[in-house]
Length: 194
Image 1 (tube, rainbow, N blue to C red):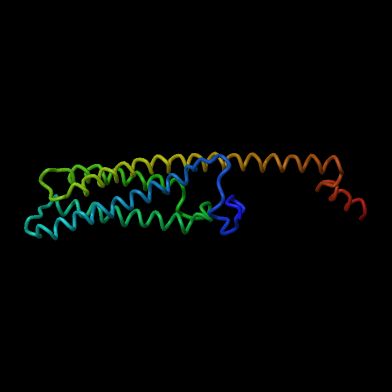
Image 2: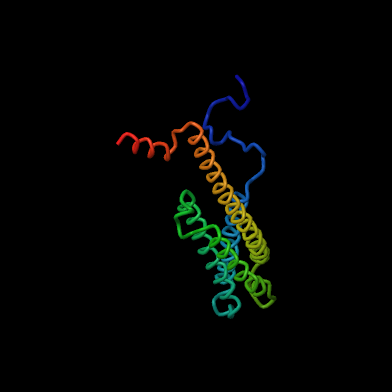
């Protein structure tokens, strides 16, 4: 019985990339999932603190800390769902790579004051919530950077495809002219017969 890669089974789990490096798109999705998870833990820890100490002990910064986590969790859920739904048709979808990068910038702006309030000594947030709020800010910055790289990579690929298609078009026109089977010879040939 062999223990190598030809064991059988599902091929999807056996495939590796040629460079063994995760793409910008993969890193962006990892960052978005990390932000989603950290947002979940942050608002769950805050909700647990509120239920433990009671609503009367929670001030405005406490409720704001809860809202930061909930909104970030829902926003990241939206981004992850849109990545799944529109990945096959990014060119024809309204959810472009550039728009996604701009939406990821919103998460950074959202988490900077959020971390300030959550880390405040007046809040009831537990240590776990504080750590995960800082991790959420880190993942927001990381995934925005990777979304930017994905957008730039996508633009370079579009430019390369455009140039490659132009070159293919020029080559096929030159080959047709050499063989005399191009559009011009077909048109002139049909005119000579009439």
